[in-house]
Length: 419
Image 1 (cartoon, helix red, strand yellow):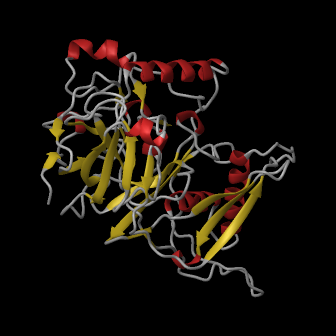
Image 2 (cartoon, rainbow, N blue to C red):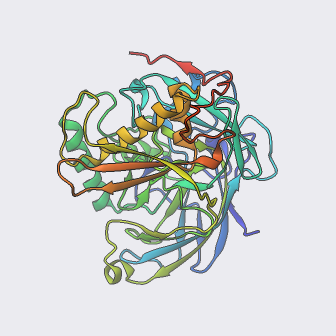
């Protein structure tokens, strides 16, 4: 096992650990450790809410989830000799739940969770149709996930870090804040908001001198969106065996990571749509000197997917076009067409006895495939959602005999949106 450079004690909160991580992006956050190119190391990661979500049958914790505190990231890690303009190579050697802790109060100790966020506290991809908070708890058995809140399904997890990236330079950070601030300014009172501005009160800034926290926190970028540095990309195939090439903007790259997922569907559509958990990641880092210019990689990460995904051979696919629920035609709106495809899949699953919320949670957590199937045939884009049929304990395919009626069990815990 590689040396653990960021070890977490499950009995302590993230802020009380031996090494303090961070929950904002800023070039002045100092590294917690230094590694050499070619070196392998282990990193422990806490689930993104640091234990705020519990293994129970209530969704009050999702309703009141502390969004200002996320994500709790492990790092940064300084890589010797790496300079701005280089490409940082990151190999994911292994990734999984908290080792040797199969039960306990923390997500990752034999269980994880998926949440539908309420409109007034985060929202989600389908927040207009699902304004309230819901939760599903999933139990892990090896690589398999099952849930008392969404019965009748089991699937192999594609375990991966939802968030990993390098630190921005001061110039890049200023660009982020300017463009996102301009977007917020177009509709500052929107719920959910268009973007998340810097917020210093709940900022955690690692080993930075506490006298600088207010200043740096007022500049530091929130970790919710993906950006040029990688960040919160939520790519389900970024799993064991993946190789990622990150652009470098500061000396040492200052790599950070967290937000581990046991499984996820393409799009992580409920916002807290993966199966969230804490765990570990084994990494190896290397460098391509001057790689950003050599390969034209200046504002994006590129990656080679891992090779441990479950091999599903049969799918049921749902299509959607860029026409609103009210019948308004939109021009090649791929975001809308993917929403419609997801809604069609949800409506279909309710015919078997699931509630719409159970179906929505399932699409966020299970390894569905989301695709842009047509983006040129004016005026309608076409998106598709591929649902693996093997994850169901019953035949989910259409037939002349009609849909099987399953027992939906206790259902998904809910909490009403607070207006």
